[in-house]
Length: 491
Ligand code: BG6
Image 1 (cartoon, rainbow, N blue to C red):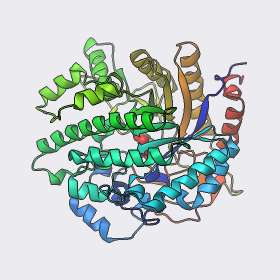
Image 2 (cartoon, protein in one colour):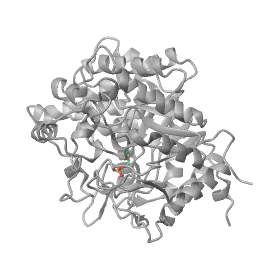
Image 3 (spheres, rainbow, N blue to C red):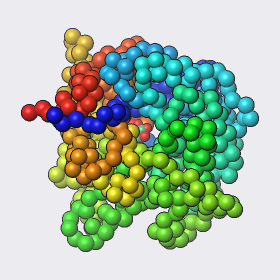
């Protein structure tokens, strides 16, 4: 009987900025997510256009209480549904629930010296509810939601002050939740500041005098996040000695489009371009090739005395990552089709099918990714995001027959098992993304659904927010109850 090891952490994942809602309640301040606009006229596959934002756009957003075009303000309204949602997770048998704390719920502007007690109480209630069902919280400290005042007044993570503000926030949440939360992630997809500087880093291009200065700010911000992440790891270990702290990486897996050595090299380089950022958090230093890249781009990082030592002294305990799809790399791209992927576009693989949003579906790529990461870091892995984002149809009888999602997840779980049993990868757990439907990060759509629970809400926020179990709900319940056996042993 094939199954995962005892204690394997099955569950689901969300982030406050896309799931929680309650954007102007309980003393919460605005965050970057609250001013991110749904753009129905922009192609959902053109992520760069979806993410484009100017100071003017933000000022307009700040003047309105509209939630129709600012869907991350309502998310799935976990803020008011958390008891019901956690009961559903318990019914599925979750061992772990990945969520994030909205920094601006704890420090509404980001720079205060005292936290917002009402915000702290909210997460107390959420963690208590989870623990009531023996579900371990896995908490991301920062998932695309820097407080907006910190962004507008300090230029977000570009400011050196960001480290102090973040450390104060981390110390507050670690002290407060020390008996409730043992699994932590510092920054979601730390590499993503390159692709969406506003959401992750709180950087607005028109605040900088030139595109070059903006690019410089992106890498400088990333340096501040590295120092902050190391200090967060240190604090977490000191305050919660039995805690485990992970980094979180976007696993972008590239295949050479052909076996031409130049294409193979290009794929290796593309892959390194994201692995570089996990390297810093695991090995505690900038890899030589990242330094070379900075040099070639004329990027010079301002470091303070002690930064290198901090980064060196407090590496993470495990590697968590998101994996949705893979893509190809080629030196000569003439005539080749482009495919979308998790936050980046690349060359389409002719051997793979795509989701309606253009993300290529590649279960084998998950195994390849796991082997890559484990061979490189030799630390336990945790798959904290994986899933199929697509639209669901509610049948006349109210049911949702999402066999496509079941198929996607089953195929990924199978290759994940092979990575563990054949390739020897140490895997802590699996939390599928958006276990209860939530707002898409890239397109701000509700209709790009990942969940096993349907939320009655459309792209404009209309709906009852009623929760309905999809077909995949029972399927996942069986997967967890059999520790993967129901998928791994099926004929
Ligand atoms: C990951 C992010 O990159 O991908 C999530 O951590 C995001 O926040 C997920 O939601 C899926 O992307 P999307 O654009 O389909 O929501």
